[in-house]
Length: 77
Image (tube, rainbow, N blue to C red; front, side):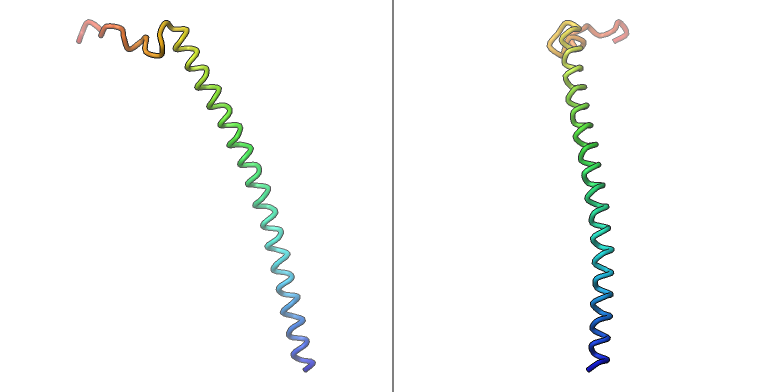
């Protein structure tokens, strides 16, 4: 019975060690996910700002976004 108890104690210790490594890995992955989400949110804000800026430039250029398309083709066509 004593050998069985030693073997079970060793298995428990091994499992606890593996669990500690998994918890550490989980924590690192969670930090990385949070950082990536922050980057994605920032990129989404920048894209929205760029779309707004493009709309402003199209409006300022004298049309509803299609001012340049209404110009006649160049003479060589």
